[in-house]
Length: 94
Image 1 (cartoon, one colour):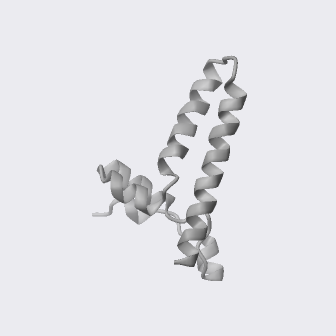
Image 2: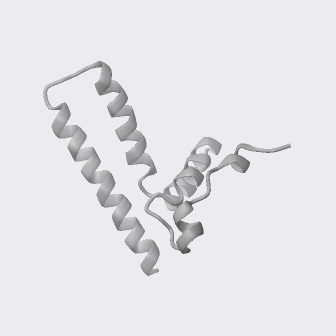
């Protein structure tokens, strides 16, 4: 019997160059979320929660526009980029 983890996509960057990419760990972190292991998801990919928040906001904003939606969207994107790049730098240096 196969599980959903058998169908996870491999990282092409890691296969070709042997180096993690900025997205490495997202699928595994998402699987941890589905299984209810929230701490392991955060450790695996620290931006998982802010990316989900951004996704929910973008879906909501697609249907309902409001006054400062652009500023909020750009702030969430900037926050995600900071977390992703910061955690990647931490991962490759430790």
